[in-house]
Image (cartoon, rainbow, N blue to C red; front, side, top):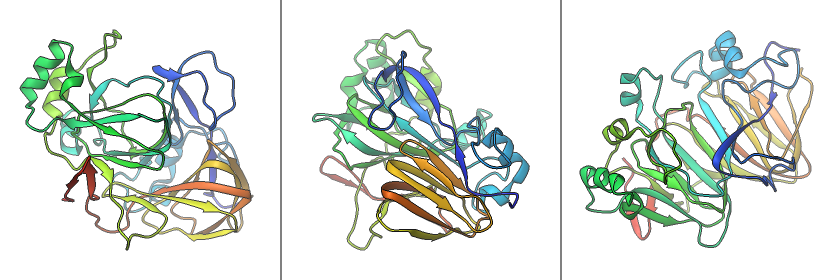
Length: 329
């Protein structure tokens, strides 16, 4: 077997006060604590197959560098894509993530632009993206003090199948009643601005300093000439979704690894010279940038999402907040 090969990662389940006790239909495990997130490609996720079994993704990225992470990754020793499942049973904190420049000033490797794909959304499900038109940062600061921060947020209705783009600097939160797939820059930097009195630490000064009144956040607007499987393309990631009934034959660019996430069903990933690897709903397989070709064989049927880095310059996607169209920049 070659040094690098497609590998399965073991999910990490993260307890959150806004999480749920029932993770179906993604996971069937019985849980006794509120789980809010399942992290699939964080540095602490362990490899489950092959000679690297038991090693952490972060250690493997440091060992193999661009052979794993690709030439488009901003750092040669850091896996560039963090993918999660989110299970909000209640509202998340109102928060903001800094952009790359602000994050590096704070000693972090990068900022955090992210996107959410709604696998499921109950009727009335909402997220908040940005402040209401005309609201200022100082007005928002006062609203936080007066425990009415939600009044100044721009609430957006979410339906199953929506893709939402959340540019760094966007004040945001997620309501309950959804199952989301999140793709983001590999960063865990979050400034919590408002938390409904849950008693967790707030980062009001840092968060307001990172807040941008105008960003490209919103529902991604698809166009007729977009590739049918692509949900969103941005400078930081490309996300696809595909329903497989036959074998998918794929090629990998040296620019980026592929992250394959099963969101319904199961399949087998095959690559020449390596052992096949099975993955099922809720699991992720990483195909290193050095693996030129692979195939995914559905076991009956498989709905899969695929995340990668753009291999060339990409502008931010066109988005909409309500009826208004946001221009890409």
